[in-house]
Image (cartoon, rainbow, N blue to C red):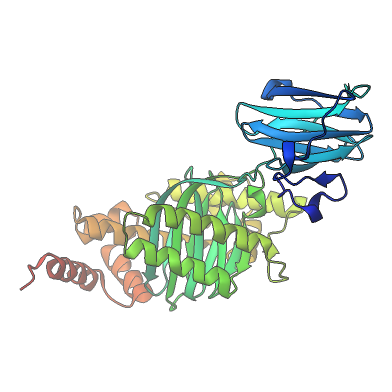
Length: 399
């Protein structure tokens, strides 16, 4: 970063002259030689001053003076005042824009020695490593008891923050429990699913976005416990989203970027990374394949034995995997997924209950209705009526 040129900061490398002095403090006489030097970006070099001293002053263009006692550790100063540097100093003149012009003066026997093996960094400005390009969705979701999302994969990153309750998050086959105040981030292309415990509700925030960051893996698949600073940033994002003005889009992106950097900076033992041992990786890989298989074949009969056989594992091993990573048996997982699919079909309204039961391979419509009521606490008929009632209320004109 470029430093301000003042007496204290520059004292190690030279002296600042008083620009109110005649000739801006530069010497005159036959023993001195003066020249005007124009420097472009492609002509920046490191020099060693072989003279008693050199006077420097900017003429035009914004100029950075890089100086050091050693060629490999330059310090950068904005040259906006006349200065004098002693012999033996390594220095370079760098234009901030395309070119700059500098006035130089030294004794007639003095020379600059170009250091061929030395390079100078011309990218000394503060640059942003994290770049959030687009924010696609900002949702606050309050889910019903026993919420179950069968999973998805997409090309954007996704943030999930639990506002109340408890949410089970499964990423590429590995399960993590998010309590109130916890946040996690899924990466592009990562398959993930979410569900709540039976009989429990959950409320959470999801934000999907595109981000470029060289250290993105530091954010992914971890459980972050947000402190007050991070929680307030998340609240401000929601406020900007709910009450937008002409500045809100930029504010949302900047605050989301600040939130991600804040959780990365936290030195907190509550940040827990998922297991990465070879055995756990193999288990996750197998479970991920099984979950994808179930999702792709949800309209087929899915006895646990056939699911295990299709994925080249035994029933006992498959049961162990589900209990270890999802805390439910595979048969229960399949039952939940089919019931969640049945709710989607009821909302779509194209099939009656008998047709839905047949499509999802229930033995009878009565078996389907009994399981639906057992899990959701209401019958399919009551659920369908509640949807129609809600839609009617939403569509009713306001007085």
